[in-house]
Length: 396
Image (cartoon, rainbow, N blue to C red):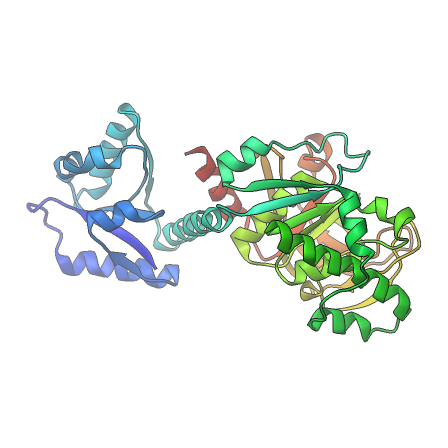
């Protein structure tokens, strides 16, 4: 449900019936109800609309303006009875007096799409507020541009940060225990070396305990340090965390983990953290790959070893065709990229990480001129508008 506070002139020619008709049509296009509320409820809501129903509403707006200070106003207009003209006067007043806002006006489907994206953006920010991300160990040495700002993380998202020594993870892995769940059972049932699966699940158990200890909603780990110390990888454990909706990233890459948190909060979709591996700009497709992925994204999968080391357990999955979104943001949330594409094929090469995905793209300029580091996040569906709305929200 999306709330709105309504103002209009009593001299307006627009009737209650016509206003209800507009609101109901917009509700139908939105797929959720628009609910008229009091000023007090409007002010209490994190996200709500200001419905300017007619011309002559400007004076009524002035009566409540002082209470709106500091609030970004989403001004809804039907385009009837001079409501658009009044909305423009109100927005001009806001801009001149230190306020901010925007007008939502146009085709019903278009306006509904904007409201949907804005509502998802506000709900995503609310989901993240008060939670914590963790980094186990330092970022991998090759992540020379993958910096992040703990201050921006808190100021813009309300997300806390916990740094955990890699030695603490290794000590937890040494306990050789984990809680059985549906995903552990699923992997143990696969045709692969059971001792190696058990060893990989010890890493999962260690992740579980650190998540509980520090109250994390997601973590990233300097996973290559595990190769020489516990002689396995974090691939399987991270796959399970991501399947359970706990964001798990590789190589101590904090910008990638922040990107997972943002996209995950916006979409509630499982996420594939991966490397761009190959572009075919002539035929318009890209190949992305990595050794861990939530099985909830896949048509089917097998188990393999970790690509670079040839040890441990990695997920080698296959996708159904369909729309997808490729996303990444800077570690200080100053910039983002969201691009929609279509999964078209499931290639496989023994010279790339184990899960590989081929995506149709119509533009490669971002990747080849101003990429945000190497790791990117892919989810199913078309979510660029929601990502754009989320980052506009951070500016308000």
